[in-house]
Image 1 (tube, rainbow, N blue to C red):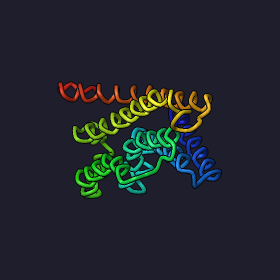
Image 2 (image 1 turned 30 degrees about the horizontal axis):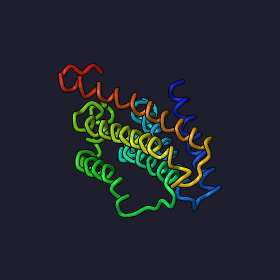
Image 3 (image 1 turned 90 degrees about the vertical axis):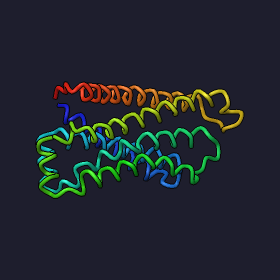
Length: 216
């Protein structure tokens, strides 16, 4: 049942993202939201592959190199939500060079994975995944937590932007309808709660890792 929920979630996000891309592919805010939805689809797929026994074996038969691909979404999901909120609230919002800094956590994580996983032999990578040793190793947990806390930080930043510009929208930043602002708040608050719960679970893992009393 849990796996089915994840599959449905991923399918609905991909379907909605494809619909948005078809309707308004050249709209910047639409592209940001579609990208956010695609990341939100990759994450349940990653969890299925990472923890689901049958899914893990199936992916390993293809290649261990694709095992962590869905995990990269943790490092860009929050940034895409943040850029979507900014593009929706701030009039004439554009992408500049400073926006590329949002990719820095992703690049750091890619560098870590190249060094600690992709550089290993096929047999070593397969063994790490089969035994799930990598899931409870300190380096992976630290970077996993980093991805969860980064997207939690972005969710907080989105909420601050909404609160900051609520009173100024009609005066300086366009004419968002009240209903649009309401559903935007619902999305951000929902993501804030989800990301907060996820980060709390990772914080517990790190705590028990530090006291050397890790209960699988």
